[in-house]
Image (tube, rainbow, N blue to C red; front, side, top):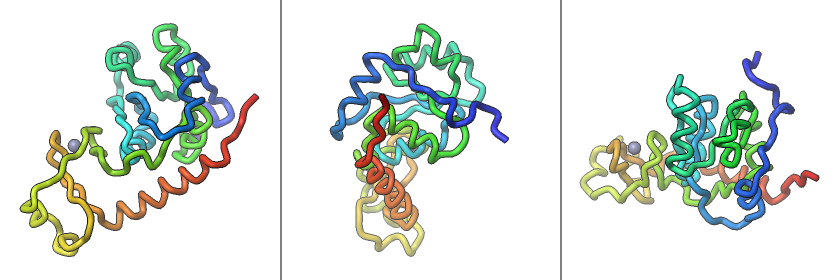
Length: 190
Ligand SMILES: [Zn+2]
């Protein structure tokens, strides 16, 4: 059972800003994004793709969510149609279906030219901070089987988490590539 609207109930709040992004099929970075608490999973995948994505805390008041979107000039991705229709954020909001990740990805793809391979694994999945190259000494903190893996070792300057190109990154990359491939057959709405 879904507590929110079914997939066919989502809609796009059309406005100049969102429309102009939709028209841009290039690979430029999106402006900052802000996912509501129902879209936390999608938010982490957007971070994995390299997009600057804030994720709202559980239970945040609508007013604070709106203030953050406006204050940081972020597009608001939300499952809440009523929230998105409020005049303060109407020009910044994209309504997505609650529920499954794949449904949200497809719906988002119909609205924004998301580049799922923009800059994979260059942002922290926990806090969206850009990752920095880790020192050589940091490799010793990795699990032993991961120390000899080729590829960059990065650290989040904010939460200090280490990222290395292990099997989880390969699996996630395959999913990002699949979503990127789906972009080549865009759905055209009238
Ligand atoms: Zn971090």
